[in-house]
Image (cartoon, rainbow, N blue to C red; front, side, top):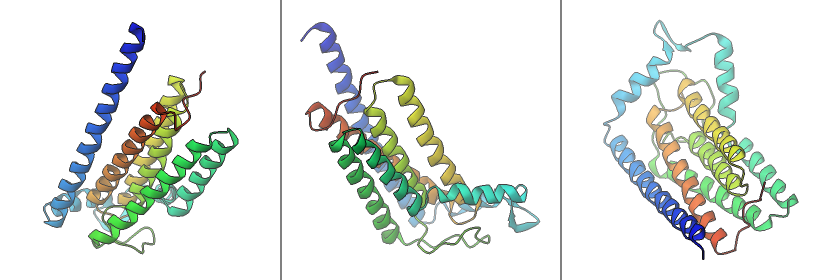
Length: 235
């Protein structure tokens, strides 16, 4: 191995180590936040942020004109199970058509596993939905963590990091990851705006979903090194 190869190897090892540190930090952050929520330490902050998005004279009226609330409903649908499931199927199909069969299987397993984790966490904590304001969307499940926020992070961030790893062009990588982050943040904010989640529900969903995406990123890196996952395409 020449000097350049050694430098690239060391850099990749440090990058993987940094990913693992972020994964551990994300898991720790989620557990700390969950503990604070269970003890009721975040309730006052949740109320302040939630009410800040409402008309003080009429708590049933979110801030802004009527079309903003309609946009909020459209955006929040991007984190729904039907939409994220459809997008995942399209992404897997795209990878299959490009001949990246192992990558397609990995995406299907990681996205499906993330959705399963989200469902189990929500059932385990069973936190009631906000009752300060009328809900701007129909809800059926518990509140913590926000399923829409976590599933959007799981699907969009996981797809973003995995698709970015399959292409060596920096501009395309940045674009894919940027879109994934933007969609994840937008979905979470829409859940608070519509009054169906406490802010800490959304924060927990983002934290858990981002941690899962980083875990998938690290897994893809390890599998690519071992030749069990397709390498990035050259520009």
